[in-house]
Length: 357
Image 1 (tube, rainbow, N blue to C red):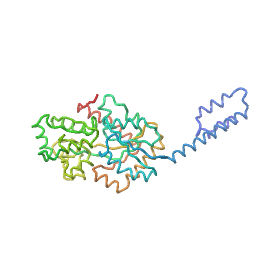
Image 2 (spheres, rainbow, N blue to C red):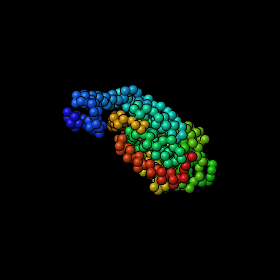
Image 3 (cartoon, one colour):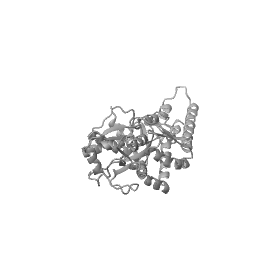
Image 4 (cartoon, rainbow, N blue to C red):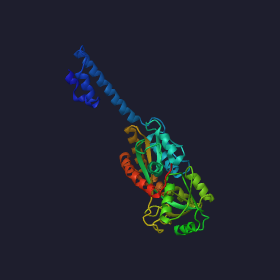
């Protein structure tokens, strides 16, 4: 009877080692019937737990999904989240809420998600800065990208535009470099916060051009844009969706884009390479992360939902119009991508000399 209890059928539900220990070391006064009852009980318990796991996977999500963004409303991450949220609600059958936790280059939002219950109902939309630049630029970062989070999906690749206040007497990157060179220390550039890509790209441009500009960090790109339009700062590097919108309205002037090829959203604006800076190519990305410990079943449901949304032609068209390239990667591929990007950006940060204590 004991041998039959140890049959392979049990291994699918209960650890084999635990069964062996139980069956080979019974109490001295335990008879065969008692052992049979115990084995039958463990079988039923394991079966019920298996059904419960399947049921959980089938019922996720069971409540609204909260997407945390570590920057204020109105920025490019917000635009991206809003573009996907409506369609995501239809796929998941639950309300999708966007929650803004701005501060410290996206670190405040990352910490909020890191500390949340890992059940898949709280996730983070993050960018290049939060996921691969912050770990290299912050001396004491309170999170680890692949230690404290589980990748869900990469959703877009995104070049940046180099922008100036439209009142500046410059029409291209060459004129801008001449303007700054003749006014050392008098030209400021704004960013969405210390350590983000909008901070690092101007530092890379300063290094490539030999220029000196003063960095003014903001709590997100929206207030930085406000001051750029008002002339409080004269220069900024920002993702193309918002840059293209303000450029077309005449509120800012785009001088160049950081991609290898011109952007469909700004077809008349040359690349930085075309403007005389060879090998200057910087493309960011957007992706969704869940807190470490989130069940794989929930991660898979979310990843497949994003894949479904991004495959819809109207979403792809609107993303391209905003200046982002739809670039879906599932959970495992996104993890591999981040594993490669972390050391690459660490080297970029090291060469730039940027560091935040």
